[in-house]
Image (cartoon, rainbow, N blue to C red; front, side, top):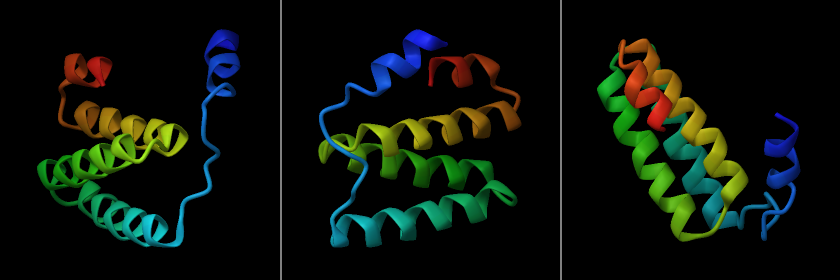
Length: 86
């Protein structure tokens, strides 16, 4: 666990999103969170969109949060193997 946190501090960019990136992030994240209670497949779709967006723009810390949420969605679907991969 200590190694994980030590490595996480070495990311190249801070967690500060630009204004446009912030709008997109919170819009898609709120849709994904909304669907977590109703339709896990839709939630995973939005989380995947957000993961791709954050990967392309080099926001690793925000991306870690999205990957954790994706893993939790897979666990809720009973897909522990996919959750571990994520």
